[in-house]
Image: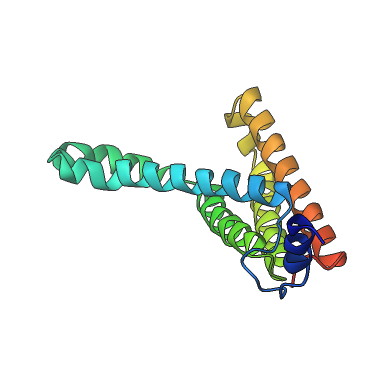
Length: 159
C-alpha cells in the first residue's frame, strides 16, 4: 500500500467524533455565512450601544436611541431570536451534530410566524420593494439550509 492509501484508510477508520472527519463544503459555507451575519449583527449592536458611551456622546444620543427603540416591532425582536437560533444551528452543523436541522427549522418557523403576523398587520406597506425581495431571499436561503440539514441527518452525516 502507498502512503496515500494508508492515510485514506486511516481517515476512513477514524471514529465519528474525530475532528478530522471530512465535512461537506456546503457545511463550511453555511457556517461562514451565518457566523459573518452574527458578527455583523454584534458589531451593529456594539456601535449602537457601546460606541456612543465610549465616545462620550451618549447623552446626545439618548433621545435618538429612545425614538429608535420605541419604533422597533415584534419582527425586529423575532429576527434576533431567529438569528441566534441560526448561529446555534450553524455551529451544531459544523460539528455534524443531530440537533442542527431542528435548530434551523425552529429559526425558520419563528421567522415565518412573525413575518406572517407583520404582513397581516400591513407592515409590508411600509417597506420598499427591495426590502420585500431581501426578505424573500433570506427565507429562501433559510429554507435551503433547513432542507439540506435534514438531508444530512437522513443520510447519516449528522451524529
